[in-house]
Length: 178
Image 1 (cartoon, rainbow, N blue to C red):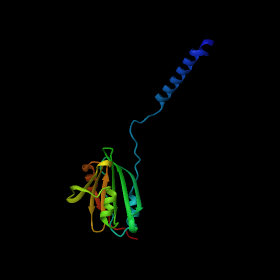
Image 2: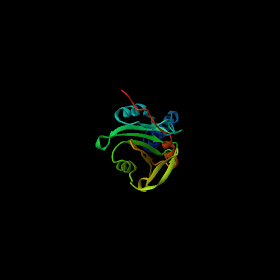
Image 3: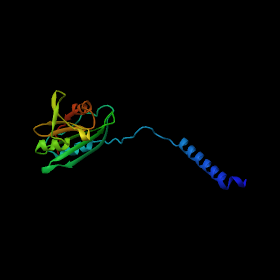
Image 4: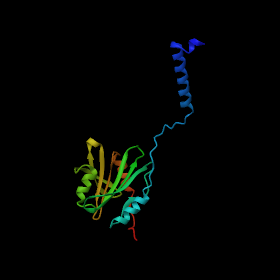
């Protein structure tokens, strides 16, 4: 019995016991092979934003199928303007974000959110033209719509069709009162 507790045989037995223990641990421990993306409700953020701005807020009427809202915030823009950010993981596991503000000048805000001032085309979304912008080094596509009161930007690594899907679902919410 002594030869299994000393020298090479002792080392081999100890290693085998450890490997069997690790194998059993991995066998009985539940493991998920799916990526978990935390889902964050943005309804209160949108409502709070509506109380902070003097115009009707835009927000998705409903989230696109298979998309997970995973970030939202209100930030201060330049000139005292407020900026609303709603971020998503798309059904194709890409990133998309909807941003809006009444920051002036609108072109400066749009350029900053799109990381580009170069318009590469237009895309019809729900019957309305949106500017397409693309920044190749970041693989960032952006759809920009400048309205009289607010600038809307849908941006991210998602393809044009997915960005258009998010833009098509945007609706104006009634102005918050009280």
